[in-house]
Image 1: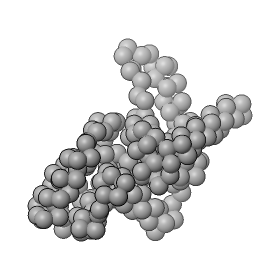
Image 2: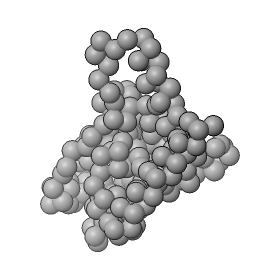
Image 3: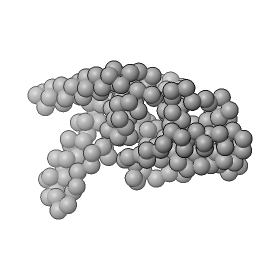
Image 4: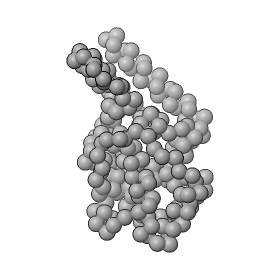
Length: 206
């Protein structure tokens, strides 16, 4: 990470290509972390590898590009400053980063006393193709209803759904981030989806 980037704690990331993440062998991460501890310039490799992953998570939690860029930069600044404290003990480096991101976002909301909202407009995007105007309007209305429903969930349930569907993470990976068992995460995701479906059905019925 260059001096300017570390000093300001900012990143420049667009909203395109937010879905998905690259699976990285644990051994490769351990080697990168080892090098970063010995030579802080080597942290750049970890930064480049996980920038999109962290930004995606933060963006879907705060729903604002500029705020997400600032918070993402602060996540990596915090990780850079404390890389010497990280030791692999059943928690992968990516999970460690996302835990920092989770705490950073929680503090952001607490400081501003804002109601937590998420923008999931890009979740499971539909191929528009030659869709007619009325079809496009209907799809936008459906996405708005989903955004509303997820935004009504408690923070922990929002986090589980974002990691599962925006980050496309496995239950075992989410378990590392949330400090739960994979089975507990699976139940949490399932119950959260049921809650969203119930809210949507109630909205349609009303």
